[in-house]
View 1 (tube, rainbow, N blue to C red):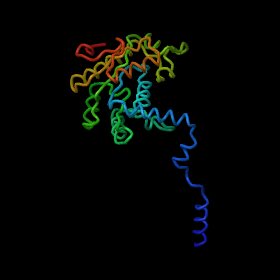
View 2 (cartoon, rainbow, N blue to C red):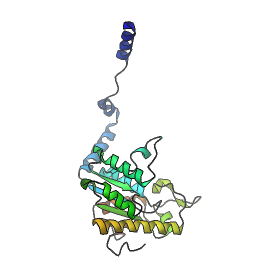
View 3 (cartoon, rainbow, N blue to C red):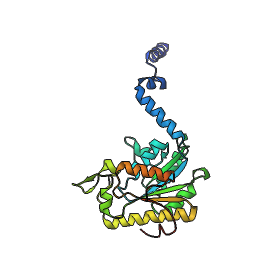
View 4 (cartoon, rainbow, N blue to C red):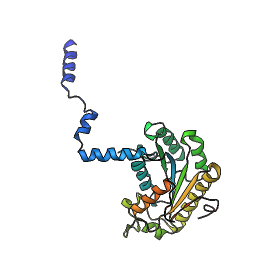
Length: 247
């Protein structure tokens, strides 16, 4: 037994130590370190926001949420967890999504703010989300990415896949199949109802951004402007009771 313990100890003693954070940083190119430090310094000046992003499939919600995560330091609470790792699966039901949101918001990485991509989908889910958030995590902004017609939705971001007739996954961040005019109008109406609920029940300022004809860079720029409540050149409008009375 003693010899076995000795052999085991010797074996462990000869094993190389695990790499440290210093070793990892040492392995990175200097320009990459400077770029990351610059990004983190910029994030320190970003406003604290708790934002929901609404809109039809293929409207660029995931691209905007990822832009907010990288440039403003906001957790993408429904994308950064199980759905973003190999073998992981994104939550599907409203109950699962709420559970993941609460789980993510308990992590220190989310202290600078967060974004919820594509949820809630209706007024009932909006009420569920609001009632499950603590006072410090209450939603304070919503952004709707909108396109009046399927053609305008498909032409957004300057990239249309002719073979499948839908905006490319790389441009929009969406892998959804072709959406019909009826499905688009239903999705727009759902987004409007959610925005109206947040406005009337919680006094949350919402912005509707028309994505028609926008390149990816223009979309991200205007979404960032909306986040800061800046003027976005007339293609974005703040909410009022009339804005979300219908599509």
